[in-house]
Image (cartoon, rainbow, N blue to C red; front, side):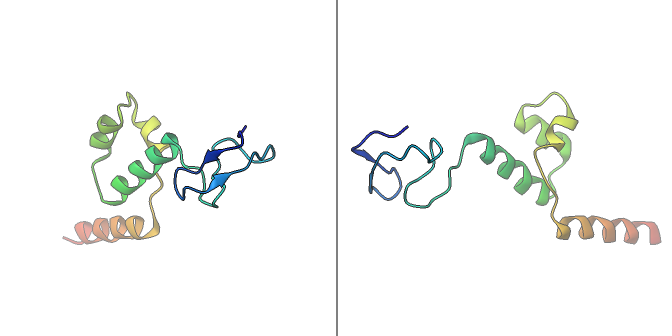
Length: 92
């Protein structure tokens, strides 16, 4: 809940109290970003940069690779690059 007189940490606009807005949501229209979302972004960016999954697991501090796998989503380019790389390997 906001109190009158609070200031947005991004655009420095004065924030009126708005009880219907989610806690942490920015008045200036910038979406709420939390540490958990940043962890997903971190994992996704590294996974799509072809980092080894075991290294990513260690960097994120997970015990299990299955936990780490829930944090990232491979984009289509990464999947197709992996596919064509495997096909090329099989042709040799």
